[in-house]
Image (cartoon, rainbow, N blue to C red):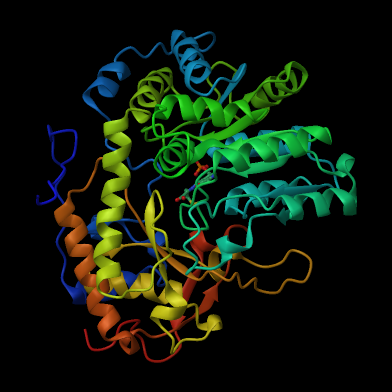
Amino acid sequence: MRVRSWAEPYKIKMVEHLQMTTPDERAVAIREAGYNTFLLRSADVYIDLLTDSGTTAMSDRQWAAMMLGDEAYAGSKNYYTLEEAVHKYYGYKHLIPTHQGRGAEHLLSKIAIEEGDFVPGNMYFTTTRLHQELSGGQFVDVICDEAHDPTSEFPFKGNVDLDKMQALIDKVGADRIPYLSLETNVNMAGGQPCSMANIKAVGELCHKHGIPVFLDATRAVENSYFIQLREDGYADKTIAEILHEICSHTDGCTMSAKKDSLVNIGGFLAINDDKLAEKARNIVVVYEGLHTYGGMAGRDMEAMAVGIGESVQYDHIRARIGQVEYLGQQLLDEGVPIIRPIGGHGIFIDASRFLPHLSRDQFPAQALAAALYVDSGVRAMERGAVSAGRDPETGENRYPNLELVRLTIPRRVYTQAHMDVTAESVVSLFQNPERVVGLRFNYEPEYLRFFQARFEPILGDAVLTGS
Ligand code: PM9
């Protein structure tokens, strides 16, 4: 029998019009933006695949929850609703809300890291590593080798390599390791999951040495879906049960609720240890806001509580990841080099293989993202050497193995037809890759340079020739 199609588990109640532009208009817009897609105006973008962060379409229930906002400065009702939701689905004892994920990372780094510490993690994330460094720590990558290989088909490329972790403990001593930062569905590796077996083993190894494990729970629900799909013994467990089990092996989490939790702003730090939570509750008032709102409006906390409940619904997560797969499969069918297996929140194009005529110092991923925008108005994000920044000790550019362009799919926002248009544009560039011109910096900010850096083409004044 023919395989039956599936469709989104929602219907559209309100629409937001998109701006259609011409290639000439887009060539001007990207030049003015210094060939950095972060510096484009969203009004000039047709299909916005920059990020899945805060770009979600909220449900009617979440919008209704916004009306229940209790904007009391202290002790808002919505804080308690959110606390209940975090406790129910993530299982942690103490909740400290923050304005977004990096707010939680800042607090955790400040209360846990001391000058000269080493902070292991399963691949770096930009804001996470910077906060660790600003607190005097040094990030150490303990992810498995497969994660750095875009062609490896390993189903759990997010896994920690336990030997690398043990080697770090042996080298620097457990007392120089304030915690291990465990990201679920590893963003920079291509949205790749960790297995439950690995999460459990990581917890056991770290706890044996008295090292806490802090989850980066930003996309833990997406990770839970992959565990259900791929790991023996989990097919009959619900997403909520799997999520709870992941968290049970850890001691707390940092969370950017702008992803899994289906809201446009918000985050939290969750901690089981009473003493550490007390420290976090004290410091949050310095940087974020009172401990019962931490930078969020009451209405946003209420919408987040509803979003957390929706995020673990099977129909939601299957359609969300199904849409990513739909786009990825189209590109694979045309031979476009993308990270395999297809991950959770986006398609990651291997720009080094896509544009073999460009060297790493011509920033192929940055150039490809800019060229894609000129071709079709699709906005993507560079995730390669520009994102990796410079080594704080040597000042040299870091060149990670992965030089990627991320087509990130916002949750519940675009239709499969938007995916078709995106795929056609990528494929058309892939058929004539030499049209894409390399870039060089002409402005480089000190921190998280990918957000605000400006570039120019190494030849002429266009990133895409012949358009
Ligand atoms: N991720 C993303 O587009 C937002 C902008 S890029 C810095 O992927 C993880 C795994 C993230 C993440 C943000 C944060 C920070 C922490 N961990 O953006 O501060 O993917 O809410 O979260 C982005 P906030």
